[in-house]
Amino acid sequence: MKLLFAWRYFKSEKSVNAINIISWISVLAIAVVVAALVIIFSVFNGFEDLVKGLYTDFYADVSINPTTGKIIQLTKTQLNQIRGTKGIIALSLTAEEKAVLVNGDNQSIVTVKGVDQNQTLVSNVAGHIVRGKYSLGTTEKPNIVIGAGIENALGVDVERTIYPITLYLPNRNATEHLGSIDGMNSFTVYPTGTFMIQEDFDNKYIFTNLEFVKYMLDMKPDEYSYCEIRLDSTMNQNKIIKILQELLGDKYLLKTRYQQNQSLYTAMQIEKWVIYGVTCLILMVAAFNIIGALTMLVLEKQKDIAVLKAMGATDATIQHIFLLEGLLLSIVGGGGGIVIATAICLLQIKYHLIALSGGTFLIDYYPVKLQLSDYILVCFTVLVIAVLAAWVPARKAAKELMSLKS
Image 1 (tube, rainbow, N blue to C red):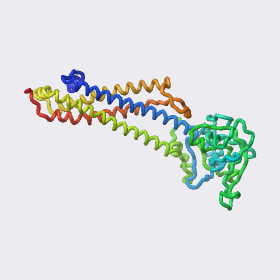
Image 2 (cartoon, rainbow, N blue to C red):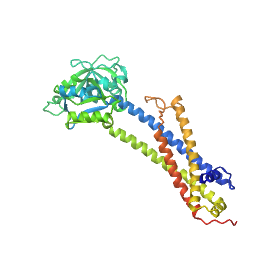
Image 3 (cartoon, rainbow, N blue to C red):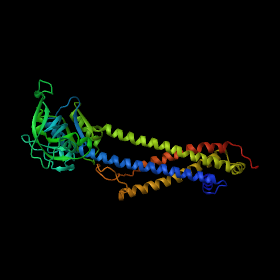
């Protein structure tokens, strides 16, 4: 019965035209803000998936790192135990160190990553080669695959150059400062390929073969910087990690892909909640229209309220009627906004109507991803704000003494 009264008040013509105008302005304002919130969330989800995909291609599911220092020791027995653990698909060993890459008068500080032949099984750097080929060479004749940013900084053309460039790595046995000649080991390397994944990687990393880097750093046969592992995605990954941690002990630190990039993922979540907070403030401003519309409706329906009270309606009943009226305004506006936003997002997904400017991105359109959780959050937010906005005029309608006398 309360909902019936609220619906009749919502759709009926008011004696004062301004009430109709304010009511539809409030509906329109909520629709616009809700549509904007859903679209922003969907675009953010699209970019988030894109970035996570790029980091997924670079980082393995799990890495085994030293608890302290820069070196871990993994014996053949330990490696066989890791490989034999259920849920382990592939394992790749890595030696990593800061280095200086010099090509004539150009030089760049890089992170050289020496990897074994299994690297292509745990990450997809090889799938992002844009020039040349993924070839790491041998210990005696090492090749390097470099990021696009490093290629530009050094003025290297991997498809045409026939000259090697010089790689300087720290000499672990040096007695002098690293800035001296004795503090660095150098070797000529041949650039064979260029990868392009993401600017952070493209400007920082070069890849070569594991044995060459271990030789340059005087690492022992069972010494590595870390070990990368690919897990079976159909199994409980946390359970596999727990088994590995118990197998290896406290001297080894296991990091998931999220933990390897925790600052990135945390920043992305913070950005999403900041966007949500700002949009909620805009929605609250839009909700003031609901307060105005309901306040004017209460003034117009004074005689109706008096009749209802004379028929036995309680203050709570009157209050609920006008609360429901506020909810109807928000539901119509919010529902309209969701329909508009969904239509726009689906059109963007199918036809890529809105392009990215600049031409430096991996894609040339705004990525969009619709998520049910976003819809639930938006609907809940709209309903809460609508109830809060409708509370004051509804309370006023319930408490005021009304008379049938004009």
